[in-house]
Image 1 (cartoon, rainbow, N blue to C red):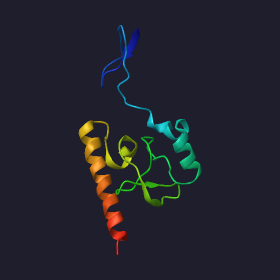
Image 2 (image 1 turned 45 degrees about the vertical axis):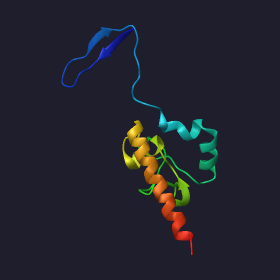
Image 3 (image 1 turned 30 degrees about the vertical axis):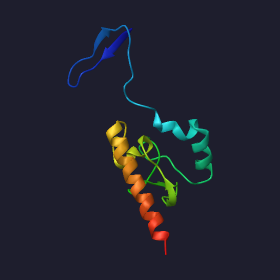
Image 4 (image 1 turned 120 degrees about the vertical axis):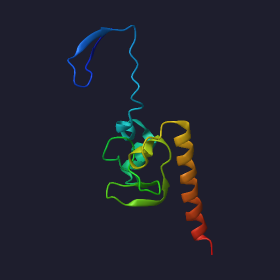
Length: 115
């Protein structure tokens, strides 16, 4: 396979490879259109894509944010779909840390409901 490479500040060069692997990660820009559950949630006004095309829009408490910019009080996004707000969430340590943050936010929400 012929591939044109262009290194920063240099002219393009052609190289031949047996295979090319795309390592950019999942295409989260179209996740709402390609996942029926997320499509339904979007149509119901519960979620919105983030403005960067990285996944879903969330606030800093990991709550899903709708198109009007309002966070849902009981709908959380954990993992790579929340990376626009939290940064890269593709590796196991980052996903685990983010899951712990989401669990703590849920705990706080449930604790505040107790009387």
